[in-house]
Amino acid sequence: MKEISKEQIGELVKRQRAFFANGSSRQIDFRIAHLKKLKTVILQYEEKICAALWADLHKSREEAFLTEISIVLGEIDYHLKHLKRWAKPDWRITPIKLLPSKSRIHYEPLGCALIIAPWNYPFQLLFNPLVGAISSGCTALLKPSPYTPHVAEVMAEIVTKTFESDYITTVQGGRNVNTLLLEERFDLIFFTGSPALGKVVMQAASRYLTPVVLELGGKSPCIVDAGAAVDLAAKRIAWGKSINAGQTCIAPDYLFIHYTLKEEFIQKYGEAIASMYGAEVAQSPYYPRIVNDQAMTRLMNLMQSGRVVYGGSTDTSTRFIAPTLLDDIKPDLPIMQEEIFGPLLPMMTFNSLQRVADFVNEGEKPLALYYFGPPSKGRDMIAKSSSGGGCINDTLMHIANHHLPFGGVGNSGMGSYHGKLSFLAFSHARGFVSTPTGVDLPFRYPPFRYFQWVRKIL
Image (cartoon, helix red, strand yellow):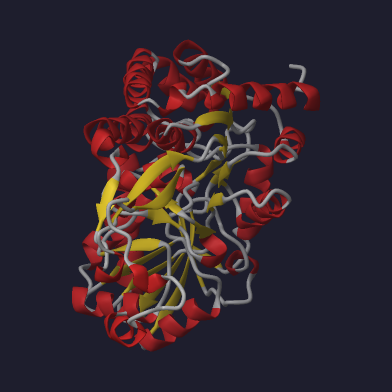
């Protein structure tokens, strides 16, 4: 396929700016109609979406629906339910010194948005931000990942069937196309990917002072403390690490386990994997595969860190890596130097929770933090550390709540979305004071009469 040229990209952006300028996308009825249409087309394409996710990532239909399609449909429904209220001017209290004026916030769309999606949840992470763009009244240029080509093709079909290209369209291609896109001026760039690429996006955005939402990643710690329900902890961690074969930005990246629980945890982890995928994980129709050969090679090299105590089997011909526990892990090993993004879970023991907090705080701020043990100690761990979000006695589930912000902090990202925050991410909150003309208080004008009295109320 011939990739799009710089001139063609420039023309697309120009047309989208013209469409935004005509005011159509600002109309609430227009936004609602297109959200409904998007939902209808997604439902029509459900089988094709599932087939594409199987082709690219070996995701089962069930996992495809639970982790991708249902999240987008739920986001659309949530916006349809609340959009009219969110978009109304928001009246605010006016202090006595400004009376008889009135104050309110108007929410306006930022304009023409660029949304760049990754490959690991290619459907969810392109269309979920798109819901926010539509809801706020923006136009959007969408860039799917080239590493999941079947999904990218289906998403392009969905977009073409649902929207005018001057309003919302997709652009296909590799990183060179990303480079061309980032040379254009947008009103918001929404990027999901690695911290390294996030820095590239932010640097490009600085040329025009374009605001960015960066959904990145990092090494999300998982802690199993004394007093944890080991059986349940092992099951929930195994699930969080094996969904999408660990290729999840909020997957548990490494495990700190209380030294008294390590052997029991290893046994329970293996039992949990077997209960989900059977004795032969490679034969399970529910276990995904690594996205490409490059990622496969990188993960196999990381597996040389430490000692395999569970799993460890691989098949390069099918890009299969079994869920694997690694022991004898030291902080300076290669597997502890980068986000794993695969089904490998390195373990370290501890006997002091403060040591764990110190270790987490010495590194970059992670996208998620997971604690298993007494909830009171979990809350204490949260208070002693920083992360984008997380769970106590669970993994991944915070992403499923529309009422919670999802996003990183520091190296794991900036900005957040989901639910109302998606609407706000693509909006500008404009504060206005409306002052009546029938009354004009004299004390604000020189020579500042009644200053001593006015000073007391300011």
